[in-house]
Image (cartoon, rainbow, N blue to C red; front, side):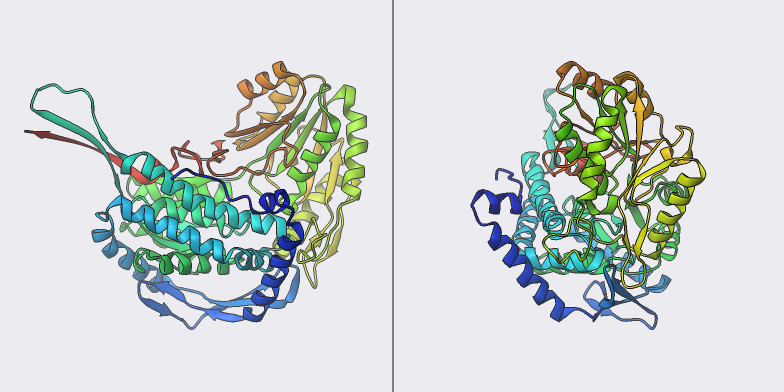
Length: 522
């Protein structure tokens, strides 16, 4: 098959059906609303397990809305899930790759049929507006179709070797799975990121135990449910909701876990990695955030720069690993850009993400609100200047804060080097592109970066010298955000990643495989 991205909203617009898009989403909101508040079990093999301890998940835009009640699994349940997955691996590793490809395509088709309902769940669960929620479901579908396409293109990663030493020698390179993978996914892309890590494991012949963020466990439940309905064996894809520290400790100690994939904070990821491989050499896939910079030169189209930077900085409240966190503007156009940018931010529609006009919904939880307050206080303490924003709108009914633009913050302040994950962007003045690139590279992270310039020489310099895994020039839909599977492989350099093989790219599946040389004499 030929891989084609899903791009739902774009397709509706191109077909002059934009109003139908909105009607579909709003109908889905009503259908999902009727289903909210249920209790969801652990999914371990054929068992649906409920335990004594439970936790509630409430919507971040309206705390009176109960999304669902979930199980707080303990060590015994986690061990059981690992044991089930280990036993399943004995057979699953030998299932023909054609069958795994077919199951992936079937899952994608089932997901298409539930596209708007899944998007509505994301909106209720983490507060994304409809455009971002539908785009996330599209991304998950893209992973199912793209990874299936990759396995077909590479013929299951079985490659005859062309050279031989002896006439009667036949040699092959065969990529083989490891075993049980623990999957630890974040709140910000509860369906798409859970999909890329889970599918990366199981389509290559491994088995999985999925542990979603406790802020957003329903999307992951639906993912596992749909995969099972498509035909992935129950024992191959297991679902466990548990405190992060309990799950993390068990996968480190339990040598039946062959590898783990994690997307989240750098500190948590680093600790897990060190503890995990200290027990035994085992593969790990990490995506650990970013401190992403956008550079705007004197040769930029400022209309493009303002729009792209606004979307990159404030889309989903800056709660993206790829969010624009720092902006370096050449001094010749600095004042004009800042004026235009602040005017754009003033137009931000903040509110209930179910409303089609809303751009910025809530941030995820009370801890995020407290971080926002902490960062604002630091700006004031360091004599930075807040041009717009800086206030908590509501932290009682929901978690709403203002998009914030900060200038004049000294470059040695720690906020320039810390991933914030809230809607605060720092803007600084530079004398040249070279200075901007040097500042952009001066952090531990290296995930995404962007430039606005109409000069091809400047763009080439940026691409050649920036230290980031995902780079953009003149991207209006998001200066550092919006990578799509099969188009922009997503992953970071330095402290932003681990394997060097990016999600949604041609080499990602190799992170879940190991090579075996096979030689036969005939």
